[in-house]
Image 1 (cartoon, rainbow, N blue to C red):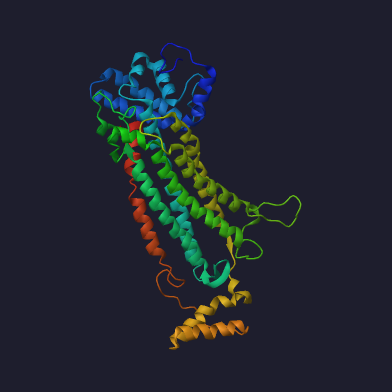
Image 2: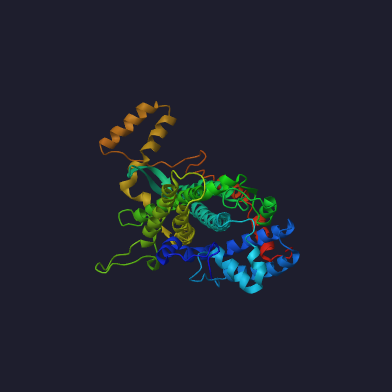
Length: 449
């Protein structure tokens, strides 16, 4: 087929190949969302009188069939077609004739790809948020299970003070609430409708952008047409920043697990089936799963920087530079979700050593406990500090007391219930059900469609 911008001249094949790049491959990920955008747009066109009811009656059933095909992986982009937008219009025209040529009225491929990316990202954020919540709940359950099992805490990788597995697991759970707040902020930026901004300067067609906003389940519009176009790259970077926050938490957890599963620490143990071996050393049981989580997460952390470098100092308006954003951005979602899935599996199956602090090498972790005991007996803190320090220097320090930590967030008072309440509040603010209901109606899979 000819290009949808064909003007009657042939293009250089080398230029075509270079400018199309990886669009055909990556646009398959966007196909269901491009079709949803077209369903909303054509429904609106009929309402404002730019499509006849007869045209809409022919268009909607076929778009919904295409949506089903794309959602099930049965959609392809022909080798002579530039992108998903062109393929959808071409396939629709092939099926229903002239009416298929009318669906681009009032649109540009610029606002089409904007809405595709918003819908794709919105679905991706929902999936990731649900996986983050699953890992959060698992970490909290582990925290409660092992809340009384002590382990050494470290500063500067030196034994510092007593910690516990309850504190350690719970720390990563609470870190995920901060990450969820970042995801929520990214969701709120994403959940705005750019459709109708056309090439970035609006349209003289009497479009009803509020209608497409409702149909697509967006919370609001990107109102200014120029800003809607400028949001390309900015929105992706905001999302990538939120994903980097999750990745940072996962990567740090993975590093702890690599350390703690080594023979020098031996705080946690991975079942043999979760480790890998060496081709030369028969005894090796390597924590490759955590090493790869860490490396994947480091790569995810770099996405936001790549996006920023591509967009830095571009003036307002659309530029083809934006095409390359997809190569960095789209794979990030699947990579993050894979890391979350395998992290859940690994954490669920790891075993905890329950008698770590009986080892005398960790006895100095209790120096602060002894200082506090003396302070409670009315010795000034600085004097208690010096007395305990001298006993350490003399190699005479011993501690036989019991831990009694009571403040919020300490070994004896984890406040996991408060952290869970925070996570629940964050999740409730997304409004996933409202979005999912809108998409179901649009796709014809709801009784209200």
